[in-house]
Length: 196
Image (cartoon, rainbow, N blue to C red; front, top):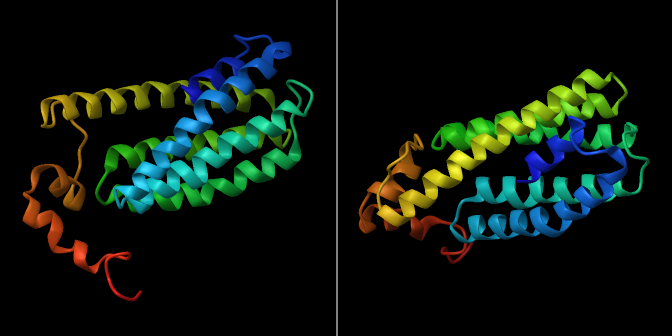
């Protein structure tokens, strides 16, 4: 949702003088949901998804929204460029980790890294074409996330995978395996062991 809303601003579908309304909507609607999603990912013992959702994406949405509210609409800000470009290697690292068991999530994170890079390069003053490319990339993220959300919702309702999510390894076992398989390694996880 947030990606689509921001894309509408980057593509000029919403006038720049109304950007503060969109940014406030991102702060009120997107940031809290992203943070809650991250907390639940950590509670589900998915440190990669928790880190991506809570620490990187949730904080990135909050940071870029707040700093954009304080700057003139449609004006690149070099400090924001540094922030966004600094996020790219961290998102790519999480992309690589997710690729092992959750390739769909890895693709989503990879596209997000591309968007951060394009937006960061625009904010560095390298041209409006980069902002437009970032906007279209953001729409792609929105469509991709919609598919993923629908697939997970249908899977939850049917108690089986209906729309492909392409899970592998432990992620696949968590859905298709029995309880014994899921608990075998739990005794070795942080928070379960007596000492770290």
